[in-house]
Image (cartoon, rainbow, N blue to C red):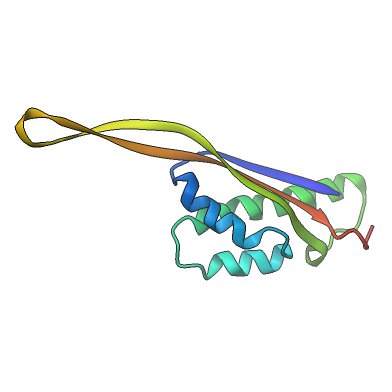
Length: 119
């Protein structure tokens, strides 16, 4: 069984979020949560929330199908970060000039699935 969660327009740059996503790809879901919990980067919080949401979605899906749910059997099958809308801001500079500041957003997607051997 597969479950998916997406967080859109998260105010973290895609480059920084991808660092966190690369840490958890292919790991057990419970292990991935622990990794993200102790990661010092700020981008780990939104990624962890999306992962927890995907696990909750898997639980709901299993309940609807009448299947037993074991969180320890879940694996992070697929994770990726896409670039969202860029908020454009300006900072005042010397001699009346303005410099552009790009505040980037991310779309974080996490897919969890059961291990292949435990169907």
